[in-house]
Image (spheres, rainbow, N blue to C red):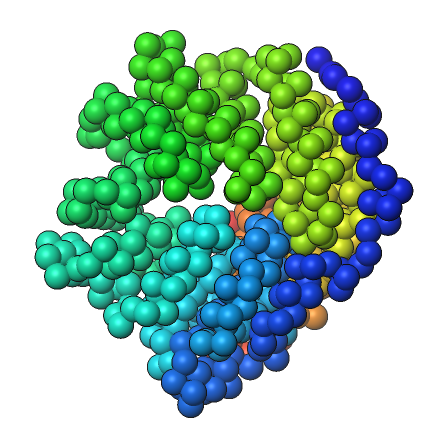
Length: 509
């Protein structure tokens, strides 16, 4: 069912439709006050940090990335952050800048954004959470700057009993970026057990609660059958019903609500009904909370929609109207282009998930004219077309997104995604697939870091899809041709280059 297909998004004034360029934004001006090092000479930046005896703050991001733009609009533009930046060496490493993917492999950063605080000697102090609200982020940053020990040492003391740890130490553990797949504190398979242990050892209070909530998400991801789910459900309902606890953990409350509900409770059970009721009550309060960011408020709306779709359900007309109302209000109030990149992404996602694909499309198409990275929204338009079953429309949008994308790493990512979509949606169109793969490999051959970190991950994903596509040798002529092109690229890499093995493995399956 569709409501107000154009009214919600046609209320922008003419002045809003011609928003000034990025440089005129308030966030842009304030972010410019930070003395970012953007020369990509990270070694020199660490030398400067050591000489000045200052920590080094590494921000790893990309121009198009909605969460990165959220950080710019809500954290980096805060005067408190700008003031604190004078106490460390701030380094901005854009994923598309020369050599960035090689540095990414060195520092174990892949997802955008990742923010790490290092000691002057290069020791990693902590990984800062990019998903929390600005107040909490600044508290964590302050604690990290004042900490004498890296979080790895704090973790060892905590797991040994934590008798000497202070509340601030537990706060750093509770707010560590545990969901970063590249974090180096503990192996991925041990995260759930580690967080559960920390939650047990931490003094009762907000830190223990946050660690417990994080442990539940980790255990759900690990499908921990040994967890007492009834007890966990009761504790979760208690946390959700506490307004302060829910607000302090808004990133967790609005994240993966449906997945955790499905893990903890049985379909149609009384416990599921109680948990969903408590969760929706907390989410609605967050969606109404004017003190949190617009993107976080939309995140609460997205979680409501996901809960409504549990057990084969779908958003009711009443919920659809609520989604339209909230999205329209928040989108119209967002004028800064950094913030819009994040808000429009979340708003379009909410509308699409609520079954309002036409409204989502209207919002995205209008944003193409204003966004500094319209190709991101073209990809979402492709996803919407795919949901409709419009395969031709989907691949055309994915192709437009690839053609419009900018930056070597970004183009490899968008190109790889385009190829994967072609194979999934139009596997019989061998000429188009060959042309797309050849284009991606051509760009890879022009890059010095095509087979490092994010680049490598996306090319490997594309390669796996192509191997599957040619599983029975049905597309051998095309496969052989693009493999020959890739072999030529691999052969040009020096024997000692760690990229060589990665390159040679792309199409081996």
